[in-house]
Image (cartoon, rainbow, N blue to C red; front, side, top):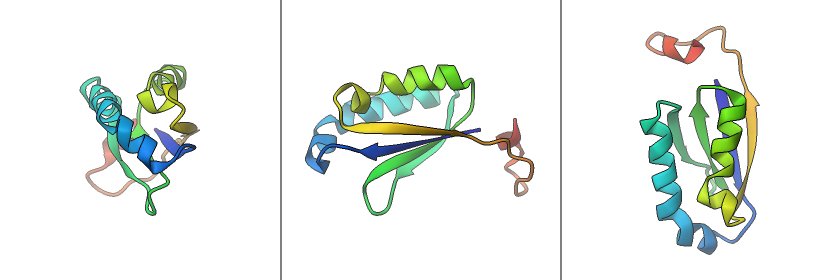
Length: 94
């Protein structure tokens, strides 16, 4: 599993301006079966996406996020080899 942590480097107003395009990009990640869960950080300083797949592929996908293209946010990608999960979440270990 990979944790994609994005941090805003531009004002929230800039993020709001590009949010529709960013959310279309997020939906594509779900459609491809790569994204498992996502949401905003609290307080609103960016977001987090739980993903699966090849790290290089996900790095390229993050580079294509409108937030990256327009200098709204940067990504920190952490790869995690899960060994234990709660019942019902076994697919996260794949």
